[in-house]
Image 1: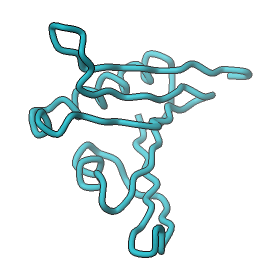
Image 2 (image 1 turned 180 degrees about the horizontal axis):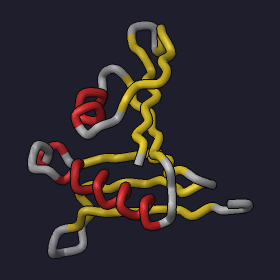
Image 3 (image 1 turned 90 degrees about the vertical axis):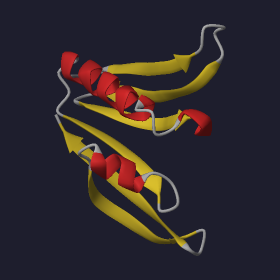
Length: 108
C-alpha cells in the first residue's frame, strides 16, 4: 500500500468525441476518492451517472480498494449518491451561509 496512487478519469463522449460528462478521482492507498462527477443536464436521468459510479467502483475493486469516498453540497447530488449506496459520515453546516457540505462513503 505504501506510495500507492493512481488517477482515474472516465468520460462520456458522443460519436464526435465531444465530452458530455465524466468522473475524475484517484486511488490512494486502500480507497478511491471521487473528486468530480458531472453529466450534461440534457442526458441526466438516463443512467449515465450510475454507470460512471459503477465503472469507478469496479476499478476500485480490481485495485483492491476497501471503500469509495466523495463529497457533495446540499444543492447538488446527495439523493443520487444515497440511492447508489453511499452513506453520509460527516457534514459541515452553514456552507455558503445556506447549505450543507456532505461527506459520503461506500464500502466495497
